[in-house]
Every structure is written in structure tokens, then in C-alpha cells.
Image (cartoon, rainbow, N blue to C red):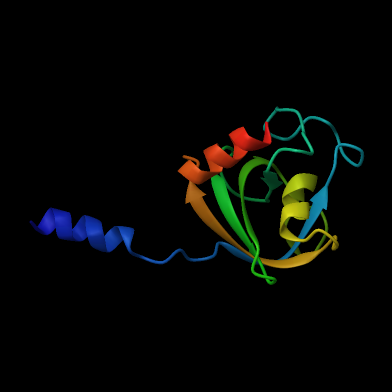
Length: 125
């Protein structure tokens, strides 16, 4: 009984941001076409670059305008002072279609993609 209650309590804890600040984006035209994880950079994938974190982990990025995306960490960066995350072109356009910088909160989701992320990725392909 106590084990079940503890599990319920743990799953109801709110996510805490791992980073807050400015997000920018980068494309294959600006940087190497191979990411720090060794995979190719693809502008249409929902991926991101952070200074710390485990490659392959998923992050929820929530913009100050209320929009949000889920991205997979596959690169290191950003390399500009004052920014907390670099997003792929597709992820940035989903967050903010007309801005190149946006204020965000970043939440770590873990190593497994959320089920709705898988469905959305299949629809984009």
C-alpha cells in the first residue's frame, strides 16, 4: 500500500526547469553538419544543443509566448554568452515563427520520448 502511494506522489511532482533564459537556433548552413553526438544535423528534426546533459535525453522547451516543443539533445552549445539552449530550425519556428531569439524555460523529460512526441514525429515524416 505504501509503495503505491509513494509512486503516485512521485509522479505528481511538478517539473522543475533545468535552465531559463534565451534560446536561439542554428542550421546546417551555419555550423558543421555533424553534431557533437556524431549524428548529422537535420534542420527539420526537433533537436537541441545544451552545454550539459546526456545525449538522447528529451527536453520540454516552453517559450514566454506559451508555445512549447519537445526536443532531443544531440549537440553541445550554445556558444554565445547569455543563451541557454540552441534549437534546430524546425523547433524554433514551432516556438516562435517570426523571432530568432525567445525567452524559454527548459525542462528535462528523460531518456524516453513522450508518446505524443512519437505520434507528432510520424505525422511530420
